[in-house]
Length: 295
Image (cartoon, rainbow, N blue to C red; front, side, top):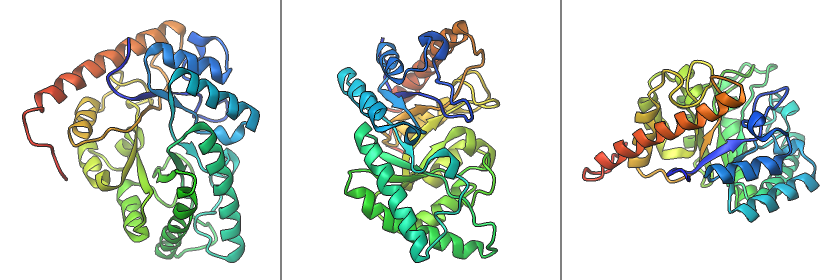
């Protein structure tokens, strides 16, 4: 039974174990087995944020499995996990730009192998600098430069603001939008993560309106606990309905684990997602005769 929307199942997003979302159901950590499981569930693709930790052989295997099953790949993080908190995006020195150029080119090649639409950008502050506004200006300039590079691979950049990692420079959607406006570059957008936005920006519908003009990818997690939609307290039906009515057609990453981390919990979680989607579909249909919302 296919889903109406373009959901992706993840291959592990939380360090240090990077547990695949359907570990109990699939029974292995082999990525291609999880690709086939996503296809069997009727999903649109997979989300492998830390793909840069895989060797090229494994990336090629995942890419072939996606092609064979008619699935898509969502974004991958633009640097390896051990470099996430390094201040690479704030560095406009010649050596810094050369390093960033090399890292982004490597990531773009990996993303191209998977067919990913975007590289996820997490921006750390430079702890040796106190000039926050200048750092953000430097990030905007680097995004503009790197956006031109990734465009050659048919890939965009997507900034994800958050506070769950230490020393983040872009901590909420307002700050991210300010940098997007300063960059003023095509192919540079924002990842809207409901879990992060609920912590950093408050009301999700207001936060979505803030980010809308730069929206690249939606990531869904209910809170508290980053669990499946319907297992928490967030207004996810209203959030996704608003995005779809306003014209969002991209991937929807299910970036969560389960309220119950057993095989029965995974199965119950899928049924909860199907119930969530049924509510969204009904809400979207109720808006079909009304004008599309613009922010």
